[in-house]
Length: 171
Image (cartoon, rainbow, N blue to C red):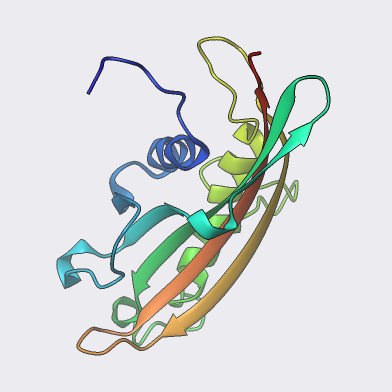
């Protein structure tokens, strides 16, 4: 392979952002062929591009508009919270607070949450060049408790990020 340096795609940028936000709290995977992890790996965070959802179309002024769908999966073991009292964090509250915990005084997302980090940094522009390439984005969040064969019950949260980027076409 040649020594060409490539632009960091949104999944790679989001992975870096999640690592910066959460530090060593999670075992991280950029893409995963399977969602069955060793019990010692939990909690797990996976950032994955959904290739079938990526589109590219012509935009005005010699640019392309590239839409990419990225899923950020948060996996926690529910057994860690069995017997928790009412005032303690329950299995579903831990990923909820990690993803969209807010300051009760201001109502703002905490900076050390996924939403705080994404909303503050979702321009995903290059820090080196200052170029802001993301022109639009949407975020949805889903939570579920998933029983998996031969594994402990897993609390799963999926943050779906859709980015629209402007890419200049060289003629």
